[in-house]
Amino acid sequence: MPLSIADVEKIARLARLTLSEEEKIQSVKELDKLFATVEAMQAVNTDGIEPMTHPHELALRLRSDEVTESDHAAEYQACAPEVRNRLYVVPQVIEE
Image (cartoon, rainbow, N blue to C red; front, side, top):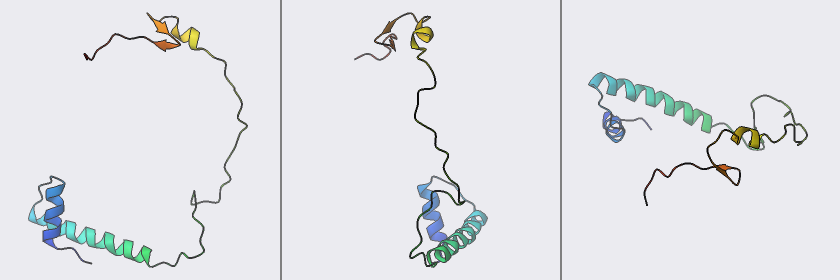
């Protein structure tokens, strides 16, 4: 489905873009190429092909779910002016 200059003008207006006539003509050509590529990709038969998480056959590196670091919250919050229930208390900046 080839685009027309009117289509590009509508897209440009929706995107709040100002295009010159040359830019409109170039946009039509580029978008037509893009749509042709998409149509070619959609024509490929993918029946029986499993979706992939990665284009390369890689095994995911898994590690055991263990705690590897101790709790430093008290140390980090020692310099805070006020802490309540392990949360920093800050002044209210938005009035109700």
